Length: 298
Image 1 (spheres, helix red, strand yellow):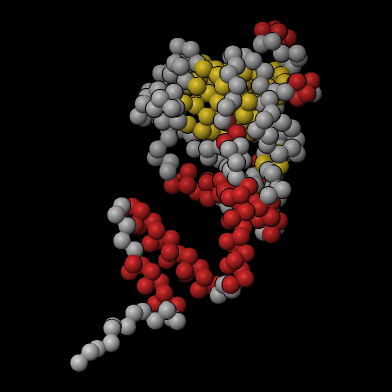
Image 2 (image 1 turned 180 degrees about the vertical axis):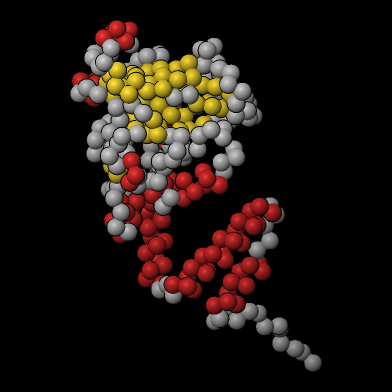
């Protein structure tokens, strides 16, 4: 007597589809297995909860495909999406045990890649920015968790070009500094102003569809690397920026907001090589011990 093969799951039932997919998953890596199974369950639950149509699902897939097509070495559209969804900030909150405990982490950023090497004290701002005033001196130290200076630390810096302008990775507002034995750094620039995230791609469509604005408060982005330490990335915000509470990327947090104090002392102005009264900003950055950098990173 020949029997019929055992029936598989009834894929006409929504709950059976999820069970069937999970039963076929057997990832060799336990962490990958956990993440992928959780992803399937959450995606399926989203589809069921919202009774998503094929048209809506395909529109979402097309959105992700376009975000991938817009991504370049200078512009990571999917990272920008993560920022504007608050996912990057949430991940930093979940991983706060990794960086130094005195300041919250901020997301990595492709605008720091290939920054030109400059000497301490050079002007980070473009000539046009510098001619417009709001002169600023930023100074501080790179320290370890014991308060000791970190020598040969590399500090990558980026600043938006001007008010209302989207980031420009090819612009001149970037620099790569290297600390000496005292761990000190300083550079001159202009007071950062709020600017717009790029909205000409899929993330712009996302912001408009959700009724959101694209404005970020003025900030200076810094990434610090040193042999034997974990890399550190920080966005340093201006305390009196009028849109400080409206960051489109939800990146403002205590410890990242700095006072820009106006110094009108002519002696200090001359000593600092400033054209006139300037904003004086101080900020120390703390690195935590970590594995040595690879040859590719060094």
